[in-house]
Length: 63
Image (cartoon, rainbow, N blue to C red; front, side, top):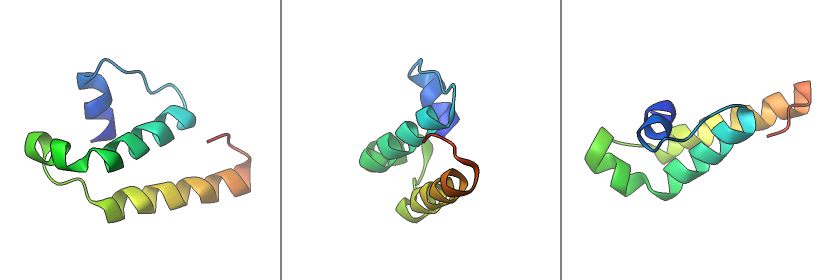
């Protein structure tokens, strides 16, 4: 869903930092996206963000 929203908004997701920003954007505008694309679960976005922190701590990615 993050990639669909980015594509519809003409935004590029070039790296994990961009994906991280898109997830925060999705979480903040979930009610709007729910009417357009379906439910954006805060729990799902949070789980993906927590996984991102795990990647960062293990592999040194800049999120």
